[in-house]
Image (cartoon, rainbow over all chains, first blue to last red; front, side, top):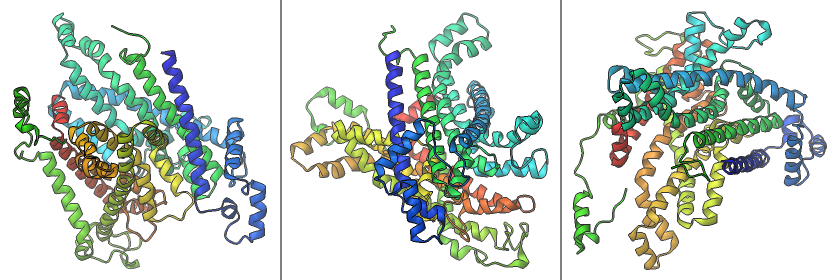
Length: 318
Length: 303
């Protein structure tokens, strides 16, 4: 197991190094000059050249990359060209807010998704099962930005219960803070339920037909114990993997949701830095997202290996 | 999946003969599943509406008329009018073409790059396989929308660039599928025969393997069209795709955001349209996959 974890960890680090090259490479390859973008279209060639020298844009590309990556590793992420502030603190604040949003959404997706999956499996082929299928299917068939708008129309415009957008820190009061989280959370949860509930449903149905469940029933155990203690334990195995993957997907989902709800997290930072041509911030933010995404995937693999003896390498479980 | 029964049919081996008789090589036409029919009907209708849009749109899609602003749905304007007094239904119909074109062209881009990548990886194996697939891993290590944003970040936005970026983002899944199909085909007898005939590598790849790899690839690609439409419209929504006054659905929803209070229909109409299109294509793709891959059906049938 240790060897397996180590190997996977090395792989993730290598992938992240490659991603950092990709992120840097794309922004460097694109037919636009950072100095020119910063100064605007009225800059004279001399001004552009002076800034290029200052930013080191005349150095070979690999030197620029090494400087950037070295800075990243030592915690110096550079300066935002727009806000003229070090990127580190900006990014840290945004990450904190985004993790809050995705964390709450993730827990809800797990609990509601698995719950719906179990209910659908126990009633499979009946109207309730079909109802759950259709409802969760709608969740993924429709783009997140559309759900976000439906949520705003219903909860902010018609009912007036929630603010349409914005963010309040916890210090402004728990209710103020929670009020701004609810709408984006609903949007994210609804958009991601289907994967978890569908997978839980199908693996649950499969497990419920296996001999050991029949044996548990034959022993006279109450159905609740059979379902929750015997069947669910095995049925959750594939779900765990999908859950970790969903955490990665949430990191993509926040781009749209945070933009619509004007929630100042990582996703909005990415869009904001694109709209304002703030390349250093964009590079740093995307790299952070990729790192979270990659570690979520790693966690998925490790959890799967942990819970599935067949995959545990180096040890033969009979 | 392909079979190559022709030369084996005349085999003298009785065991093999049995197997061949048990396995129907070309099953008689099955009736289409309800799923497939519904998918065909919905998708077909939307494609037709998109193609006919310029002729059936009841009003010009881009004529600004300040006297007809924010009209709720009525007999003249079935889906109401927007903030410039333009007919929402007409814009929606014209937008259908954009969404379809965007989804299809992005998928064509992923196929054009991903399929040769997958063929090469699966056929040559070794370091080529490693290099290509680790490259795919790297692309997959960034959430698709972030990768799309990154690619689009520094160029002036335009819909064709968005289609290219979306196509680029979705190369890895196509390449992986093409690779696994190729791996399973590479050891088939007809490929060995082609090698024995000393056919060129490109002949084997594109004339022997590719035709047999198409069915699963086409099904996957049709499902990918919906991903592409969703991602493309999200990018348009964020301002990195179609630009005003285009009637791209993502852009329509984005522009309608400011008027949700007084005129929610402007945003709801393209939203529901997109919902219908995505569901239609998904039904079509799932239905086609079940029809083409009976093993999958058996597996799902149990669930």
